[in-house]
Length: 184
Ligand SMILES: [Mg+2]
Ligand SMILES: [Zn+2]
Image 1 (cartoon, protein in one colour):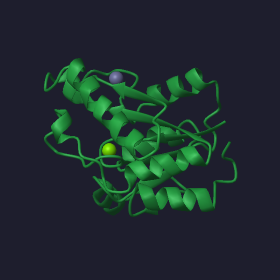
Image 2: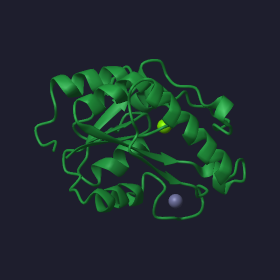
Image 3: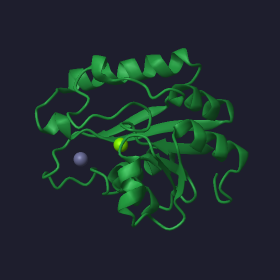
């Protein structure tokens, strides 16, 4: 089974320092829904792993998060694609949970649910914590320069082997042309 794990904010949709607190604030980055469709067509299951501490901070509730994800699903479906599952951490940054990236909890959960080893599984993020959480489980790191990506690249310290792309569409085009050797 081919699997890919995507961050949400700054990868699929535009990020906001004020959090994405409503479906209206969720706006896709051009080309990202179509890139997910291309992944599906190439046989990839597309899974999202996203920190959503706005829930834990009381900025929005679970009904709203579900409504935001409903909009994301519909947007991707309209582009001919499908997000297989969304894993989220709703906890506040100071909660010391096991799932908030850079902690690996969501990735371990994905490995369990899909019963796969994440070695070589591509993971795409715009923040260092996305890549660190993934590479701790063996994922191949892809940094996109959308969202916080340019700052992440400038800050440096990226995991060894990180590949950098302008956006998800470019990362996917590269991945489909030259999959990582160990991808499964
Ligand atoms: Mg992000
Ligand atoms: Zn958490």
